[in-house]
Length: 330
Image (cartoon, rainbow, N blue to C red; front, side, top):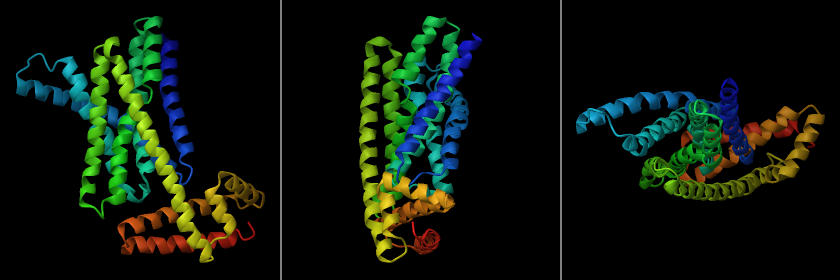
């Protein structure tokens, strides 16, 4: 039993962490700060789980009182309707907090998806652990089945659900100042997450006969979200190509720096040369600030200038120019 519990802990958090590493690797153009990514994961693993337990019990009691159900809300209603609403609200709250603390981190649609996915992965890790511990009490066979279903078939579901909320938040950040309707995008993203979660829970509640609907819904939705990620990454590269060319023409960076931002191979060469000269830290900082600069220019092109953004633009350009001079010859 103890070994199964240890395996449940390692497998649940290990798989979620592996998915997180893959997402971090995919974010090639502008790495999100690790402190925010870790914060989102921990929110999902601790805050969202605890908040869900508290508010689910309160909401269940409230609904049962209003509808006159002394025995409480039926399990199917709670699983298919109440749980998705509460869980996606608690997880989505992390994105609103991040939006208040570090709005500038939502530079593209992929940023919203990766932050939302990290919250979902944290929630998934804790939830899977408790499910596997419960299954371990029913024998090795049942434990193996639950492990396959929770970590195999549906090991990414919460990342998919909350990724939809993150997509909506990032879309508002990108287009909210120019289009009035963009204010509805976070609500639409959260609503899509709740509906997808409801479809999943309702499908698996009836067992094997309808479980295929959850597989179809979850995997189909994940593929659609992956397509959006691919499109967003291509767009990010176009921003780098367009807006950093201006920095070369202005003499703030060299053509070598520009090529490094567009080619992973050229970036590795530049970083390797910089490390050999004891300038590895400066080179990494320059590449990060170049990505920030390109994304800020893209944001200004969409929303128009503001005093705060223009000041940040000038500061970034000066910092980029100073770092480029320190790396002269690379």
